[in-house]
Image (tube, rainbow, N blue to C red):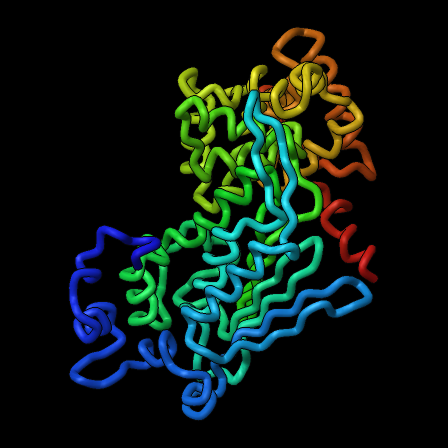
Length: 397
């Protein structure tokens, strides 16, 4: 508490009042949360044998560490933090202007938050253990008990928090280890993406939740850009980091892919992407006005993230990918019009663009193609062909 919440009034009371204040003692009795926080290893092994945090550090061939912790959670947390401030968690230096920025394999802040989430939301009636499996490329945290209250891996960034062990969660908050309910997931994603690392992944099963945090390679350009912006007093929120990370690997983002990425409804995704396209933000550029509108990195950001030729490469779309983009658009939206096709492919509204798109659509809707034409000009629309719909089943068979 002195380290993380030095302004707390509980630092000025006696031991008993402190334990009552954080919920470790209630009505003269130790609560389950108090037992988990402060219980001795012997007592916990006797009355709560399922309480265990297992840490395994290994290469492809050798197990370098294989530790099981059964003591109070605060001691376990300290032990894990010590592990990730040592040689098992190497750092690299990246130059940002005149300064050096250290990028650890795994941020101690992220590891702490992930472990706190795992022990706070685990099912203590389950005989399983919290497992941290550490390799050179990833840290995998497994927590007994599936997601609660409608939370899934597809909505975890936005869903309201659901407490499985409320008193324990409140104790961690009062101790200053967590800020407030619902912030933990952002404290895992924001530092990770800010360092140019791959986005963490949640996997939910009926009996456990798995979180993967990746190391391996990282995007130095991304790390430098975010550090530069923060040095200028410009704060980058999670939405911007998610979009930036996505666009380092994709030429554009549209509303459908943006909704999946940001875990919001399509209208909300459009609003976020439009906001990132505003001059005062300057991260994205919007191309098109219909539902086929796409969003690309702005020139300045593209040059920072992709190099001096990055923006030019984004503007020059390879026609080989046209078929793939149209197929994905129709799969997501159900159909496409010639105007939406021109907008999607960034060809404009010139006469030559209309002829070019008409030629593509005619070819793709010919017998055996992936599109099916319906209607007559000017109300022509293209849908997925019957051949395309049955193709996956044929492949599987």
